[in-house]
Amino acid sequence: MLLPRVDNNERFLSMSTPHLSCRPIGVIRTEMRAKFDAPHQPELLARRRSVIELLPDEDFELALSDLAGFERVWLIWWFNRNSNWRPMVRTPRGKTHRRGVFATRSPHRPNPIGITSVPLLEIRGRELIVGSNDLLDNTPILDIKPYISEVDSFPDQRNGWLAELDEMEQSREDFHVLLSSIAREQHTWLFTQWGIDFMSRVTTILAKSPYPSRRHRITRPKDGISRLSCGVWRVFFSIRGAEVVIERLASGFPLELLQREGREIIPDYQAQLAFEQLWPSQ
Image (cartoon, rainbow, N blue to C red):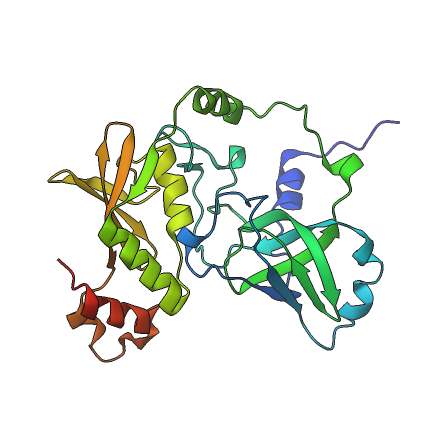
């Protein structure tokens, strides 16, 4: 059967629908508040639990019927912290040259939609308890779908430019990351007093590549000391052969700035104030 011919103008008009209607069905509550906190892909072994809160008065409790038997679900969500898109983007892995956005998982997309497969741990009314994920706190959720292993998994398919990187990384030795005595004291204080712990993420980044990187926010060494920005915190480190030594941690804001009116909205504000009083910015 032959299909009717469509000329270029009709084809263009059919593809240029001005708007599509879409609205969130809820939000996710996670421990990750800044982009630095989120892994580039979910860490499958991390014991991280998050809560998806679906909107009330929408019969979403009924929509969740029969989902409890699935071990994983797909989350379709909105990159609500991005306001523009880029056809070519820098990726968190590999060399610094740009790649086409459609060949990446970059958030800088024409339509900022993300997809993530997460473990489904429990359902409580219109709340879903899920495992390890890469979503920031308060990210809008657009849809939830069951993960079906026999149709959603293709482990033998080619992974394009990522396969080349995997081969290179497997042949490369990781750096050994150490903490100086002062850095260990600061990290212990942040964790025990405030529950703040970004060291595992820092260690993962520095073990792979501690060199200057705009995407990892690592600045060039000054007097042999490099700086890694971790949200509102800073990590200063040095490279000694195959070892990376974290020399000290620091607040992202000096005490004088923190004490100005209206600065209370800064993340970890009280912790930053207390930290600056113990270890003033240098």
